[in-house]
Length: 203
Image (tube, rainbow, N blue to C red; front, side):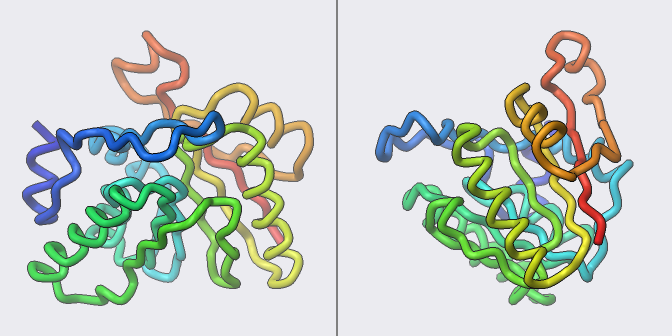
């Protein structure tokens, strides 16, 4: 029900998407949108403001981006390697812009590999719905750390459905610290991956 409600509210189409084959990769996982109900749980406990710059790795059709922009007016950038998904995300932006004309320059979608995206100086929130292998994740985190060295700032990593190798890497090989865990009601009890983990690096 919430899938239909929010898609209609935002004037976008992110539900009942058909999978695109694209190029098969052992390192990139199939796209699945973050449930709206899960986003509600996260943002009831985790604050986003209009000065934040969020990067969504593996954004698919852009659901998270539009949700954040609509409710919190932050800048959102979606990174998507699949050209078909990227095309639909751009079409969704056009539909969104027709309905909401405020600060639409703060929504952007790029079609590229996550590890090839050059982290910008003001990017400070990074979202991952288990989009790729630990090898790619390591490269992306390294890119974030290089950017932080060049432009000192605090950054957060927001992980949904984070697998053990992500968690082990962050907690044993980086200076990121876990600041928040948000368990999804009714789902976490049956599946311990149904949660958000937020890691922070302060400077």
